[in-house]
Image (tube, protein in one colour):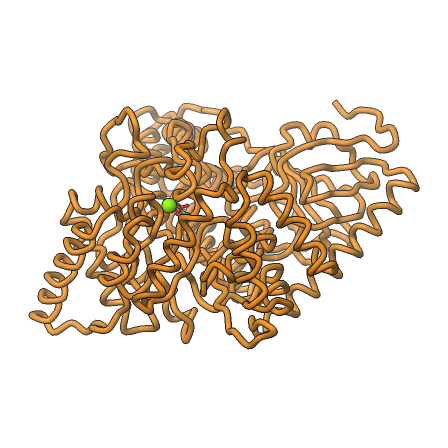
Length: 587
Ligand code: PEP
Ligand code: MG
């Protein structure tokens, strides 16, 4: 039921792609096809129905090929694999066999049989804990829909037919739909369903089109052709904006577009301080999808590849070959810049569906990260082999997570030596000089930084965990979130000790926790001795702006001052004030 739209009606969803879009609503009928079950009469009919089903599968594959051929714009080139994924779903033996099974055993019509299979798949996906994997449910559903339409002879309005300035409103958009979006015509999209990690959301971000998803009832509430504003940052939709609101958002849009452009323009500027220190600003990466935007935002390599994400979207861990291909791709695309691959960091708040983690009373302090790898040595060695093999394709660095002592590092190195010997025996190439580093994210590691520094080539401070363990604050517990204070004097002293320990052994100190991406901290961190920063790529331009305006000398003075303060609030107030005075244009 459509509501009467009064001026400035606001709907709230999840903003998954930044920016402001101003246009007219365009309702796209993407409601799921409902198949009606029908019984077949004869054996002949049954076999004919099997053929019809297989022909619909083939037809759907052809359609996807056409979409793929047309989607040749560079922004989408990285995402053509989504179409391949959909083609793979079409080839999935379980989907095909199960459907044919229903046709033959129950004498069901093809669409009825396929619907039963899809319902079953949907139930299985719905029960999956991992968010990313659960989101893949929509990929299966959209492929299923395509085949059902083909079976029922229903054609769909293509996104290419839409007129200009449209905010597309749909129940859901398949990635194939999203790939047909013409940025000149479509200024935003709004859907009833979806989450941050759906492919559609990922594509929207790559295309730079504002998107708000998960509105639940958008398609039933929003009429066609009403003026509409979409705010991808706030996750809001404004229907029938008043003149005042319209003007306000026009301003906001101009500002946003101007800032985005300015920030992107800075991608090629050097991250060099005014007193001549070159500072490496790199990206934290979980998915290959993020490499394109990382380069666009000016990342000089990846300071943290969270390899566990490769293990999350699946039922079995990736084998050596698959891991090798993944790491090699990152190394090649980031070359000549370095890529720091962190070995598996599961446990704690990172749940990997099919790696058998025991239920632990206190998982954050349990069999996590390097502790898990040192227990599951076969899995660990497979990963080490894959990383070593990828090391000849770029500047690859290896990093171990959650180290708490020298013995652990030595054990890791021992296993690395064994893997190198295995590769030598098989005459498989790798870089014998590949730098080996560790994450410093436990207070123990901070205390013995000086000892650890003698064992490795670099440190990377994982502040997300360092703060959690230093302050004994569960990083994912909202009840104690107010105590999670990056500027707590204990955290600052830990960072100082880590940098001092590294300096004595003359090794570099990177930071790859969230603190690295907040420009308020940049000058102080430079002063404390952090030499490289790795962060969410979108934060790079803002941090770079400070680096280019800063002097390391000033940072040292500032760090000495904040180390004298006694509470996190004092430090935060002081730093905030200092940064505003020193960099008035940046804050
Ligand atoms: C950290 O702990 O700061 C870090 C970068 O690792 P993760 O967030 O993946 O635990
Ligand atoms: Mg960590």
